[in-house]
Image 1: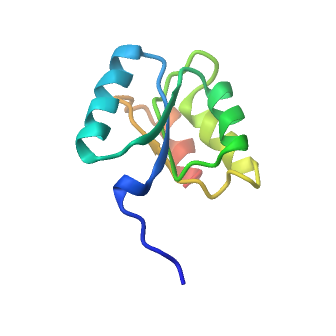
Image 2: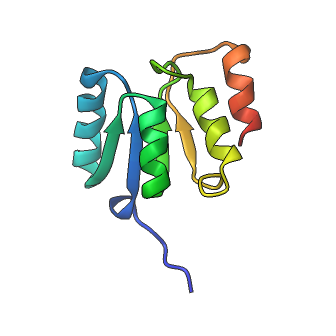
Image 3: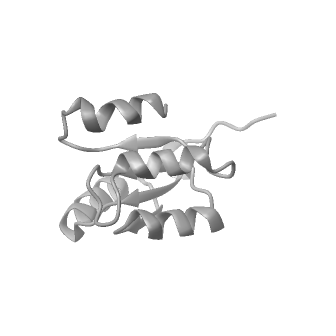
Length: 106
């Protein structure tokens, strides 16, 4: 029997190079009661950590110092251990060039 998770139960990985943005996001999580969050400044750091501990959700910005959010989610989908981890992109990007591959990745 599966248990329904509430938002306070989630382990969330955030990939955000901006410390200022991370503090804003963290404050919002704290107000919602989310306590299990990790922030990484690069895609490679996040992937390395996700392979050790699989989060319930990954939230990423589009433009990272070492890859794009598109490349991050594509790498996750190509890895059997990470392929089913939900991914959320937070970006002001509106170009189909960047967004269509993310839509295709689910």
